[in-house]
Image (cartoon, rainbow, N blue to C red):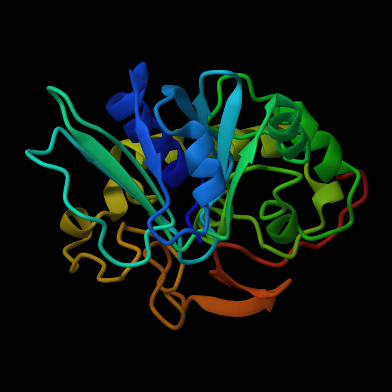
Length: 282
């Protein structure tokens, strides 16, 4: 499932291509035909994201709310020579002609719905703070984490605790902070949580620009270590994600994996030892 940096980049691309322009809105498959008809010809005000949720605002405080799910894609093509006919199962198409033709095709999303401001606010109210938003309050997440016995690896993936963090960033930020994914949330110190939060802000911001997830420090990059670049559908250089059985870039131990609340969790047994409670640790 796309993580928060993907949705933020998509929001930026949609905003750059269409903000302030009257646009055509169609539903080639017919699945969102009624919503498209309401918006067709309206000015697209802005596109924004909160966690893994995308909101495309049109004049009149109307929002298309999109959740891509596991296989959804929203492809944006700006300043094209001509707008082609839709190909495949395009649920929603936004396009504009004129001097700078552009189009965006939505396919495979689990959610695509027209909301008013109250509906948008209701969706956002269920989400935790998003590390990519300037208005995010990390203390909201901290209050949930410090009061929970659940594993930190579970809490980081809970969108009501932190919005936008998925399996890759979860695995990688825990490795970078030498924290085992099964450590109970209420054993973290406030400073440890803030360090994780600040790292997520930095890592995910890089992902918005690059369009991929890179988490290794300079000394562990392929050229520095004399190793081959990672080859994976997800791209990016990582420490533990989907590296089960491979040597840790830091200590050489074999990366392990185990299911955690229905998703594979990855960690290094030496760099991320299991948590042992000590008196006074809070």
